[in-house]
Length: 397
Image (tube, rainbow, N blue to C red; front, side, top):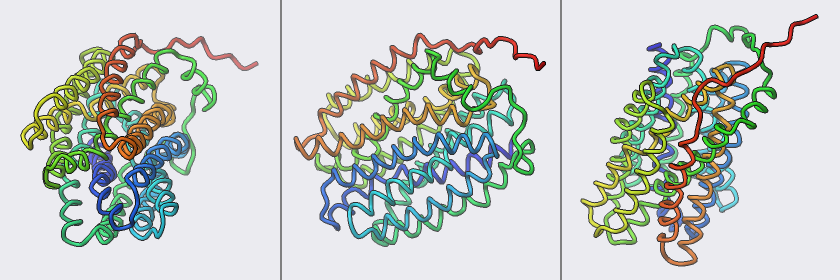
């Protein structure tokens, strides 16, 4: 258990930590290349969409052949994508590398694949807690990596900073060896009661799965909009770039605690109620942030509160999927739920850039985030967490 948690947490720390800092590159890259914010935002939006799309297939491969191979491929793609992001001569190439390539890389090195291993290797009595530990590691990665990325940009320039990160992300490769699963020795998958298509049809027809997907859409919209656009929002309001770096780091620091608490509470309380509380808490926090006078202090308080609620949706959502459908196809089903999250991410980051270029303000997207938070809280309450009832398997003649 501890080997799985240590290696899985370290992989998520690197993969998620690097991506959480991409907002720091918005202004340096657009100013150097002469692009609009919408151009940068569109590439990151494509990244989130590609992450969700490839995540479905990465989950299928991980369920069939084990996570080890998927993680190795993801690490290599991540390095290539960061190099391409640094050296792209035009917006189209930037979208292909920063968008499609890095999105595919994240699909193989983040939660859906790692949670599949955790779900199969760790006892159900500790599964939600273990998922909280892995999510907390991703949050610690944000706390650790965002200031490092800011330092690299200041010290070496935005291009060289990306090349340094390209080398650092390859450390995921040796960590993948700690997630090799005994049941997948020789590339053979363990016996399962359902095929991939049977498991998929069952989940997509199940109302609670649909509600979880809808809630996760909102999660993606909110966190990626804030993560990518808040540094520019704060700079537009006259605050220094250091305030934005510290704000993103605080989100990561407090999310270490928030995700761990959410995972631990998932062993004791109804996960649907935990999710509803998180979403309504986000709506309240954003409302107060917009209403209160803006200052470094208000930014740091907002970042701390949002940090507690940031990725704390991840453990209860994935643990609920595992509890309803079992763990045989958990990476794939988690990938489908995450695909909905990434559609929301695409909309949040792209609308942020689009509406800013059209109106000169982020206000409309902030208000949309508040409304979506209330919506997500309401739709998570009817989710049924009990295992799905399946009839007896047909007996072979």
